[in-house]
Image 1 (spheres, one colour):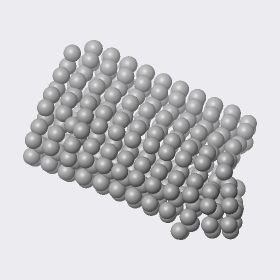
Image 2 (tube, one colour; image 1 turned 90 degrees about the vertical axis):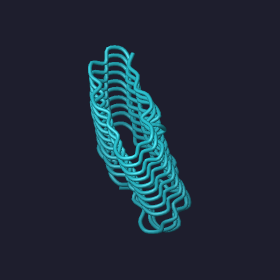
Image 3 (cartoon, helix red, strand yellow; image 1 turned 45 degrees about the vertical axis):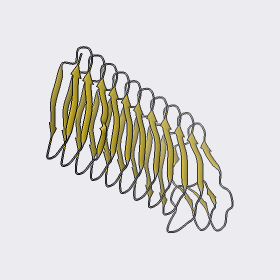
Image 4 (tube, one colour; image 1 turned 135 degrees about the horizontal axis):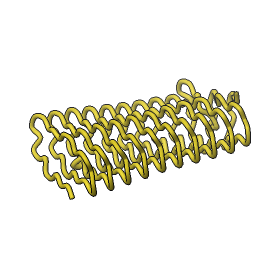
Length: 274
């Protein structure tokens, strides 16, 4: 437990080294202008949580949560064999939630969720043999949900979900032997879902579903699976999606399942297999 109280001017960088069994909770209270925390309660004007990093063999990095009007939540970085980075959640009017990255054999980065009017959710990336990268969800008026990337042997990249007026869901990319990229779902007035691309031996890109008034599914810009992607199952658009643009598959894709559009979708332009 790390706690600061009342008018602590700067709490910049938090770093745990070698065999720290639990860095559970970091909390600042009352008017800490530059924070090093996570659990901030009602109307605390915390301006920057610059860097949280854990180094070799830290078994547990527990929960990071910020509440109400935290302008910037920058970088969370774990290195080498950190088994669990538990929950990261931001609530109400966080303008920027920048970068979350895990390196080398982090078994679980479980849940990342942002709520209510977070303008930018920058980059989430996992590297090398992260068995589970489970859930990403953005809710209520998040203008940009930019990049998701999983690299090298991440067995499950399960669910990507955006709700209510998320203007841009930019790029979703998986690399090298990611067995499952399950479900991508957008709800209510998401103007653009840009690019979805899978590379090299991703067995399943399961379901892509957009609902209610997604104006330019940029066309769904581009969905491109490469080299031996066994199944790209279902792409489903609902109610008044103006454009579903280009879907292309390459090289030995065994099954390209179902593409369906519903009610007043003006254009389902191009489906191309090579």
